[in-house]
Structure formats: C-alpha cells, structure tokens
Image (cartoon, rainbow, N blue to C red; front, side, top):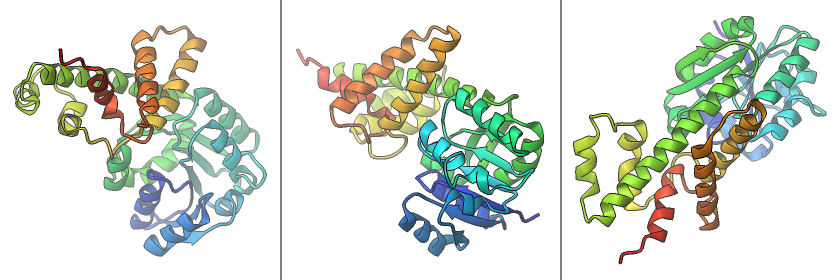
Length: 294
C-alpha cells in the first residue's frame, strides 16, 4: 500500500535508501541541507523537494532521517522548522542515523509528548548495502511504529530486527561497531604479518577463509587491503564518530572495552596520516607505515 513519506538527509546512505522507497511505489518528499543534492535526487527519482524538514514532514505517514550525528538529528527533528513541528499526530519518525542511545530516548519522549511515534533504527551494510537494498536495520522504540514502518523499510533491508525500547537499536549498532573494529584490526595484523613474512596474502586468505578465521571483512576487504586501496566503504572519520559514541556509552554503563579503545586510537593515527576519508580497512596502512623491514 502506497504511503506518503518524507526522507531527511541525502548522503551516501540516505540518497539510495530514499530512492528505494520511490521504486517501491511510495510518494516521497525529501529535504537535504544542501539543496542541490535534493534537486539532483528529484531529477533522478522523481518525488518532491521541501525547503525545511517541517515542510517535508507535513502530512507524511512516516518521516525517515539519516544525517550525521546527535546535533544534526536534534536540528532536523526538534529545531526551528524541525520535522516534529510539521508531523501530524500518530505519524512515525524513523531515525536511521547512527547516534547515541540517550538521543533516541530523548526523541522518543518528545514524540510521545506530542502524539507521535518513534523508532531508532541505525543501519549496517555501508554504501553498497544501501544501494543494493541489503541493509541490516537494528530497531528500538514503539512496537506500533515498527508494525507500521517495518513493511516500508523492507525495500532496502536485507535483515530487520525489533529489539525493544527506545535506544535498543542504537545500542545494538554500538555492538556492531565494536565487532567490526576488532575484526578489521585482526585482519590487518594478519595481512601485515604475511607481508612481513614474504607470503602471498591472497593465497593464504584463500586457504583460511572457509575455516574459523572467516569473516565478512576477510571476504570483502582483504584484496583492497593488500593492494593499499582504501577509497570505498565506510570512512575512518565516521568510524571514529561511532566509536566515540560507543566509548561514551561504555563509560555510562560500566562496560570494559579495552580493544575498542585501542582500535579507536589506531584510527586516530590513520586520520593523522591523512586517511580520514579512507575506508576502515585502512588500519593496515598504519601497520605498514610502522613496519621495520630489518
């Protein structure tokens, strides 16, 4: 059944996600801080462009957002001309931004207080997952909202999981980033080790990739890591933003995350190398820079 939707934030993730909604037959109005990007999206996909988040959200059944960080979400949701001021009662706000669990609870309360519904629904799968409609969506918030928005999100989701109260989706995404950080560092060290041993890294990966060492990162990133190509995928700057959220939450809940904290500092070194826009597999560049061939 076709719905009237709004999508706020047309970055590398939001742009294709909003496109999938149109392809699924929904009526979509978009807002982007850079108007030219919204104009380009409308030229490609049709739909309409709004001048403010409030205008985009007016009369929408569901409002989706995918922006940069907590402050960006507050601005487009709660700020002057924010989406909440334009949303009708019983409409659903779905935040796909990777943000803090505290913000999710704040937005849930604001939605509840004004007769709206809320989901925190961060995604995993990167730009390729967004373009291919193969994202994993981790969801917290109102169950009623999930029942409404879930079938709509299905057009860009390979896997969706409702996990409970507001903040649950963001907490699950934090766990996702913890796992990725450790796996990428382990793979980077293994490939660096093989290079130091004058072994053919690609052949060794072929030998071990069907056993216990196998991972998505190994399958999809080992070749680029061996070639020193880091110009695709999830950027180091974004990963550091996410790991900052993780470590803040760990300080709040008392979790001990020594490996995550260490890898976060390794990514800081990659930034210092000028690699802020490299993808996260660039951890190997730091190791190779420090390698002593003697």
